[in-house]
Length: 75
Image (cartoon, rainbow, N blue to C red):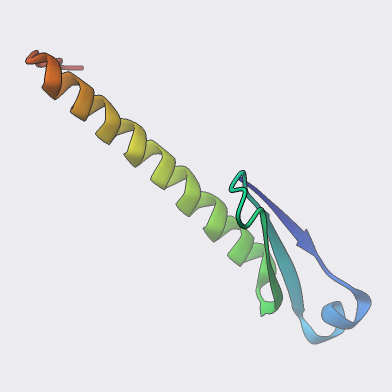
C-alpha cells in the first residue's frame, strides 16, 4: 500500500488536498479521497493504520501457526 498526496493551486487556496491510496488489490487498485481538509494528517493516519494492521495480522498468523504445533514460544 502506498499513499500519495496531491494539491492543485485551487486546493491550496482553500486548504484542502487529495490523498490517493494505491493498493495491491486487483478489484480496486486505487482510491482517491478528494478535497479533504488536513491532507497531510489524513495521509499519515492512513499510513499508520495500515502499518498497525499489518503488524497485528502477522502476530495473529504466528499465534495461529504456533498454536497448531502445540508448542509455546516466549520472546
